[in-house]
Picture (cartoon, rainbow, N blue to C red):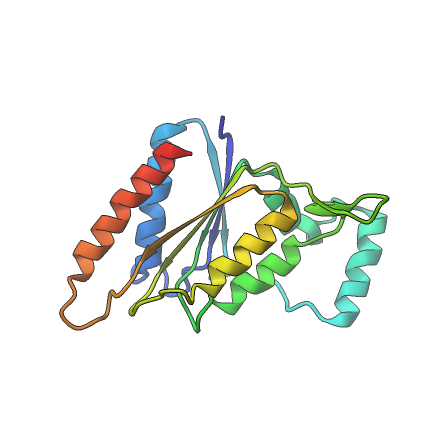
Length: 197
């Protein structure tokens, strides 16, 4: 049963212009229909002021974790750890995704919250989500260069999230393509994916 959905919104062009936003909403609407009582927590990175992690800041972060693991500084890690389903929406930018998403993911990666090490030195994930869904759109083809998804697959493994899925709408700005038809097909795929989870 899905009770808590984390929606990481990195649709930097905003709700009015972002086609990634449109596709993400089709998926989330299908999730709401399937799990009507599920709570959706949105982390809106378009207005997020998380700072870039620096060396001194990581030292401060470690010290604050020892003092209080529930310090607000660790909110990204706790929301990632506590979600039953994680949905990440980000446009295809420069072969990956906008920098704000990378910053958020770094703040989500906290030893003792989203992962830990056993006494034998084995890394284990601590997140409870069974699935992470990555949603992206692009003006041209992505092909084998979906490095943003590749990164999230690796991070999901580190966090203990066993299954990842990628929804794309590609070639939206290619001359002669019907962008709306491509997006509509992707929305239907989004509905099928939500039904299959």
